[in-house]
Length: 288
Image 1 (cartoon, rainbow, N blue to C red):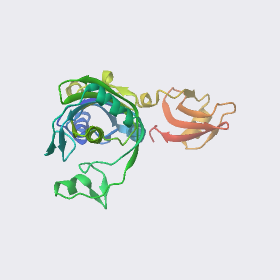
Image 2 (cartoon, rainbow, N blue to C red):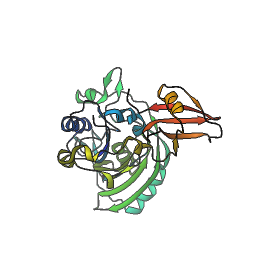
Image 3 (tube, helix red, strand yellow):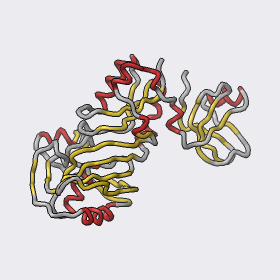
Image 4 (cartoon, rainbow, N blue to C red):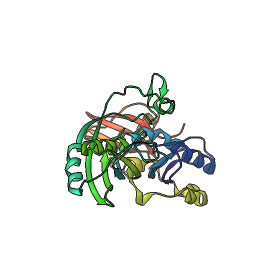
């Protein structure tokens, strides 16, 4: 059975679930999930988890993400991007330096109000379903962080290209909208490409056509998701058996921290936390 991670370069016009369905069909594996939704108009890095690796989805979703986004000033839409209906248009006399100055306000921790056109549920209903019925409901602000935010290029009088490194749960459409509001002329996102997610980069991404032709050989090992954590190799069958049974093990002298734990055959077993010389599993990745 296939197990591992595909770093898909998601094409425009596909939902993240469309990509998962395609991979499910190609690899003939039911257990397929993705590590962080991309809007249909967006392209770029979409980590797709296959087989046993689906246990790692939560860790990918919680990681930092990097985007390159197109900001169009002078336009406000109902979706906060250029796929939506225009609500307002305004003349634009903004300089690149003015955009840079406004970006400074958005760096660091922020409170962001999610857009109506999003999959967030309120009262059991997805916001985009309500939005399509012409309804708007109050949304609570969410805490997000913009670790890095810079202007890469001014394309025209109205169009600018931004690079953003941010926390999970961030809406780049909303960032573009909010920047436009701060500049007094309105703004919307006209393009979006994710260049990094869960520490996987665009350089590692493959197309769905690549997966169709090369299949399982493109799967990265599950432990590549945790490459920033040190390796801990269990030195006896007895310790490995205890870990496989879900029991904590005592390893005196082990520094506190999170480890990738491997068995005697160097099989990746689990992500574990060491504290006070005791190693406890955070998430297991071995089969039954």
